[in-house]
Amino acid sequence: MSSKPRLAVDNTSETVERGGRRTPRPTAVQLLWLRRGLDQAGGKLPLFDSDGKRVGERTVRACIEQGWAQPWFKNPLKPDWLICKLTEAGRKVATPRRK
Image (cartoon, rainbow, N blue to C red; front, side):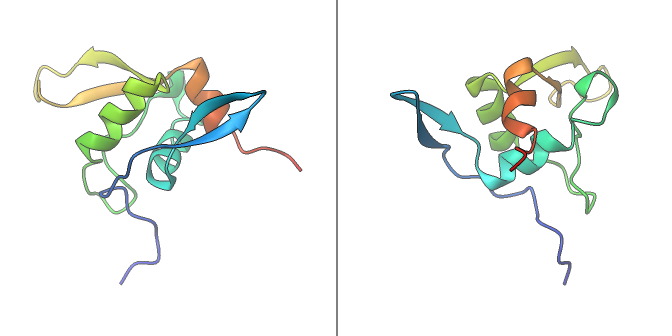
């Protein structure tokens, strides 16, 4: 059994209070996926997790809906696959905070 976190399961985003307003916060699965784009050219987000399994569509769509990711271009070989990149908001939520 692998000790690596899996990207296959997704839950609804939680919210956190910031400056008197409620701001969505990514789930652990979403955050793991977003962070993998931080060191990629152009912020490209991976299609597959670290175990080679395709990233769940719910994860991808939830991140797009929250404005953390955006579709980048259409894949002519797999038109149903979303190829995405990080947005500026996605970089902010994915960047680990210094203590």
